[in-house]
Amino acid sequence: MPNNVQLPRLGFLEMASARAMELGCNIMMATTAVDIQQDDDGVTVELSNGSSRRYDLVIGFDGINSQIREYLFGKKYVPVRSGGVAWRAAVPAPESLKGALFCHGFGGKVGFVPLAGGMMYVIVTHAEPGRPRHDPDAFAALMHERAREMMGDSDFMAEAIESLRTATNVAYTPLDTIMVPYPWFRGRVMIMGDAAHATTPYLGSGAAMAIEDGVVFAKLLRTDDSLYDVQTKFMARRYPRVKTVWDWSLKMMHEEFDSETPEALDRRLDYLVNEEPAAIDYINRVLESDY
Image (tube, rainbow, N blue to C red):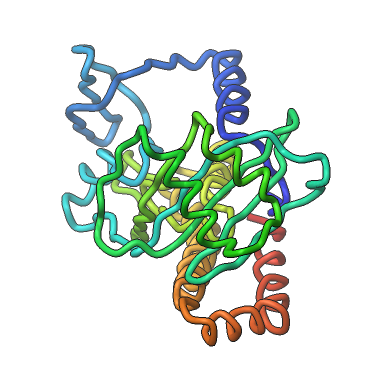
């Protein structure tokens, strides 16, 4: 996907699910796979609702804590703590916000990204040692506090930051990652998306990588190639691209977290002004290339 396409996840999910049902897909909510058995002809899946289904192919787009990944590889590949967290919320956007803005502070940043319907997406990222448990009822107050810490004495976007106090949709996410090496399949069972390559949000492309996985695989399935050939061609196209995004997202996060002193922040800002544009241009070229 072009890296400048932004839409709420709920909006995307509504569009995708509506189209899937138009095409005859049977969507079962609150249902998980409890057992998977495959042979040369197909895959038998025992579901948590007590039913059993037979499929030609099973693909696990089931997130960073994927059951399907565990079925394929056991506990060999598990999420790794990156040391960072993200706070996210959607709040009303000021009319002056015409494009994405990012404000860098000591050891983190605040981002403002316009969305449809007069809303904007606010993200606060910073290092958080350990894994503290925060009360969900306090998420809005904590996100506001973290945002104010990043902004320091500046009153820039003050009204937007103040609106975080009463946000009702704050999400707090420890930034765990995983990168499963080649291949992401065993026979007729595969994983894609965050199940295979969960990254940090530092290029804003984690969800896009999962969407691309689905688009590329669907196109390859329309060919006359065997399933194995489709799977290997998919890996050849997707793995290098996904790995580049994964590596750079992690690199950018650690560089941001290292700017916790005035001197380090000055070096960080100098890099952002004088060097990062070339790096971002490279990444944009990667993101805008064929996937």
